[in-house]
Length: 169
Image 1 (cartoon, rainbow, N blue to C red):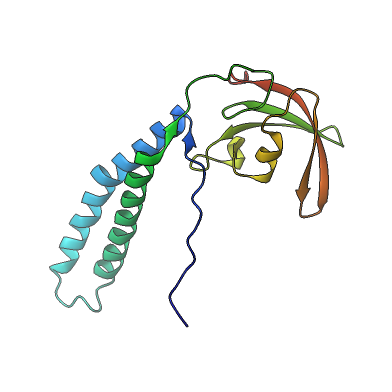
Image 2: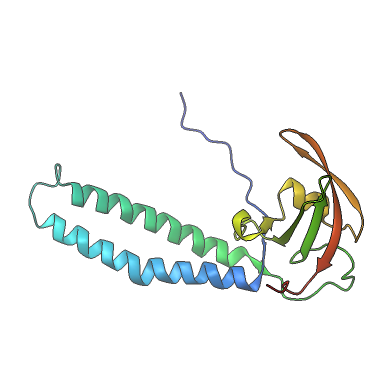
């Protein structure tokens, strides 16, 4: 069995200014707060002698590797991202950064913001532009009907609102 893994396609390179600030804050926290604390804990654990049975040392080293991996990823990713600050000229259509309200067949409404793959959070209503729903929404206008394939079958949705300013509330 080989160790080969096919290359993973990275997500789109767009991000909102808020998302960029959040990633920079995470990088700063990892590098300036968390890594020094874990390094100090590993240093203290190393003083205890036998490292082969020292759980603090073993798990501390593992956590350091995880932090270093994330720092390397964030450093490379932040260099390649493009911050989208400008509003589109046609604000009647759905583009990156829009808040879109959709209604399903049962009359239930849900508002999503189209964001980059590095900042999506479904619980907060942030939908990755690479997701099937966002791809179906992009370029559409008010009252357009879209069909999205879900695990339970196709679902029809209607666009009831498009905004490029945060909704109240």
